[in-house]
Structure formats: structure tokens, C-alpha cells
Length: 79
Figure 1 (cartoon, rainbow, N blue to C red):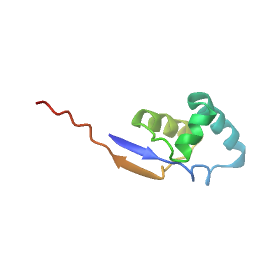
Figure 2: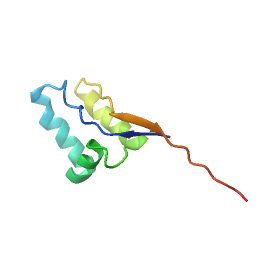
Figure 3: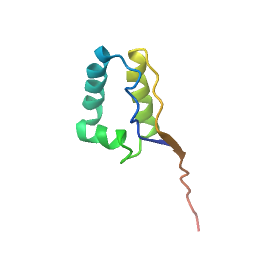
Figure 4: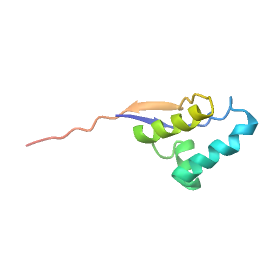
């Protein structure tokens, strides 16, 4: 599972007229506090959340790159 961390540069290439609408959709999905936790890499962004975020930006004609991605393995040990 690839977990993404941070999206601090997500609005660098976004036109000013689109920023408020994109943020509103992200706030509605995450809530403002949870959005900022993910934006600032305080909380990982799950693959499902990454898909949603990419979709929001794509709806406005943009691509987003997350600050970093880490492959996390979930191991089940049977004894």
C-alpha cells in the first residue's frame, strides 16, 4: 500500500480562480482540520484519499504530486 505524505505544493500551479473551489471540496471531504493534517504530512494520505484528491484536481484540469510516498507492508504472522 502506497501511503502519501504531504501536499504542501499542491496549489502552486493552480489558477487563483480555482483555488477556493478546490479547497472547498477538500474541506467538505476531510473537514478543515483533517485536510491540514494531511497537507502538512502530520497524517498519511491513504490510497482511497489520494484517488479522491487526484480526482478533485483533475476535475479542474490539474495534476497533483504528493510530497512523498512510502510503501507500507501489512504483514500477518501466523504462529
